[in-house]
Each structure stands twice: as C-alpha cells, then as structure tokens.
Image (cartoon, rainbow, N blue to C red; front, side):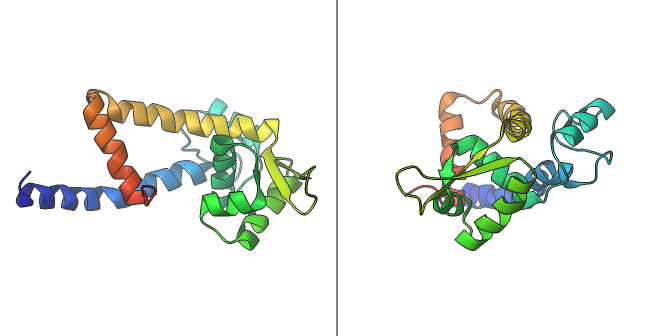
Amino acid sequence: MSAEDRERIIREVLKILPGLAKKLTKDVASHAEARGSVAVLPGAGSARGRAEIGALAPPLSTAQVRTLVHLALYGPQTMGELAEGMHVAAASASGLVKPLVAAGLVERARDESDERVVRVRLSPKAQELADRICAGWRREVEAALEGMDDEACAHFLEGLERLAGKQE
C-alpha cells in the first residue's frame, strides 16, 4: 500500500470514529431516557419494544448501561476486575454498581474464600436487558462484516483492537 493510500485510509477512519462513538453511545444510552420516550436501542423502536425495555429497567445512565453490558460480556467479576475492565477507578465502579444493586439489576456478594473481596454479577432481569442490547450490536456488526472475506474481517478486528489499545 502506498503512503498516499495509507493516509487516505487514516483520514477516513478519523472521519468515521466520531459517528461510531456517537452511535454506540446513543444505542447504549437510549433506554436511559424516561420510560415511554423514543427508544433507539436495536429492536426497541416500536411502542411494544419501548414498553418491554421500560419494564426491564428503570432509567439508567450511559455508564450504568455500559456496566451491565460489561458484566454480560465478561461474567461475574470482583469490583477490582470490573473497574479495570471498564477503565475506571475502583471508587467510580463502586458508584456505578451501588444504584444498580438498589434497582435489583446487579447482585453483590462477598467472596467465599476472601471476605474482603466483593463480587458482582447481573440479576436475571439485567441479563435480559444486556442480552437485548448485545443482540442489537451483534446484528449491526454482522451486517458490517457481510461480504468481507475472512482475511479482511481479521484485519478489521486487528485494526479495531489496536485503535482501542487492546493489542500488545
């Protein structure tokens, strides 16, 4: 690839990133709006979909929804693991989890082998909500990858991992 082609690709990626971040944030945060408001979660655009999501959870912040999705993707974790995985301070993770516990969306328990360690996991209600969000994202990723060969998909993933700083 020529330096000119590489530069063009970099410029195009830079143009796409703000829209991608906005879309993902919008999809995650949409249910944080008051019940009955316009929902943008995949599969939630209809009145029935809005009612189902409103029945699953009270209004939540974007960060709280990210916490639910993180726990859905990575499973039960210690508070330290959650903070590290979400790239937030331990105090911030605790501040995110506390209202989720109060809402019945996250369950918190002391570790059986070390009572100083607190483990968190999704409640069944929260698992259903997170599964719905992840399913919508999955459909969008599948659509984006459609028509790409295996090598192109692998390169796409590698590029995203590098961009996110997840590659060593």
